[in-house]
Image (cartoon, rainbow, N blue to C red):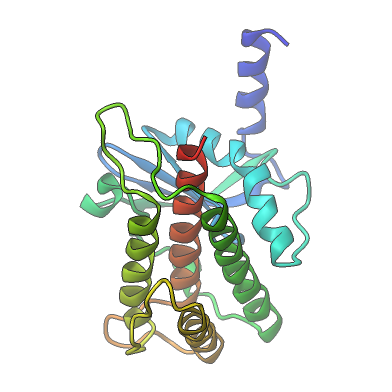
Length: 233
């Protein structure tokens, strides 16, 4: 396929259709995040809306592995078309590199079945992270300017972030040591339990809606799993 034909195909598949995958676009000054509304963790960014949607489509096969680990069916047509259901104003957090805006859709109540599905996809994201970390070398390839954390520092960073995310679910947990697998499992189980408990509750104070908490936590785990994978090559 020629480059022109491939570009035309990409533009076509990113054009919203009747059965498109619902997506939130978080639009910052320098970066745009595209997040699949019903697939927590399937979030990518780009310099503009088109680039973000292209990155999201390109990540579909990788995300399918997380869904497979969660034993959640991920149709092969997901990512063929996108339907932008909300555009969210970005912030300094967006431009820094994290999807920090809470969509109206994030406050939708969760049925028990949907809460089970969301939790399974979150756990699938952690499974991918653990699998990638187990295979990765301790020292990762550096960026073009010599930057980038090595493997263990990335894992510590993810745990630090998840400790902060847990606070947004109303939890006060002991942040586990990355080498203590039992403590990590207990830590994650507490987060999952909080998601289930808060599935139909309104967020209080500055707490996050559970859909957003799952979306942000799963994204962060997968984003760094894929970073480690890319920099292990």
